[in-house]
Image (cartoon, rainbow over all chains, first blue to last red; front, side):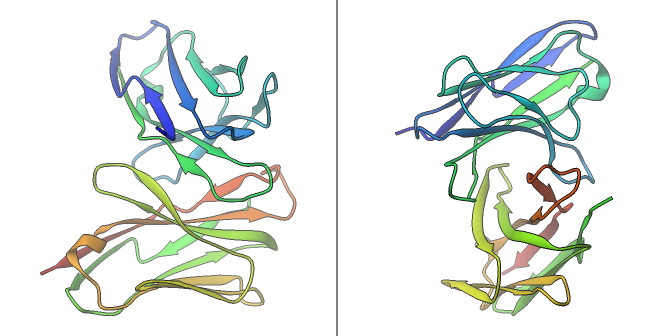
Length: 112
Length: 112
């Protein structure tokens, strides 16, 4: 039972390159979230999903796209990376009726 | 804008000391969360409160709905308590769409 996993753990990109971050969960949770964490700021919500096939924008969605084709996976895409997207990205999940969120280990992304 | 304010930003304590971390918010909420971020980066949920007080081991969380304030207390602090403690709230209404809004965190260092 792995809980919430994120792939990759660390990545370096050049400006303009694209990449996809994968969040996978084996807890059958309905809700999934992508956050970014930057120095001196609280976690900020990028996009979220309340179930398979659904996605919605969070507080800072610009420059990112997401997909949730399977219940257990939530993908975060950067089509054209910018240095402002250098951050640590966290995925989180929760069961619909329970508030507690379960976080993945994070992905550290550096955009040069 | 709905915000979550934490104090202090940084806290250094000697082993055994009683520690208090504060969180304040601006308008009515449906839930308040305390989370712990380990030095390695992992985030775990400690408590979810909507009223009153909760206790788990040496950790105690309280909330005062009228004053829009919550405190996290650590009794008999230990170096392994060194971490960043994060407060997050779910507002009843507004642009957050019912998602969590996070404080910037309080970095606690407990010296032996």
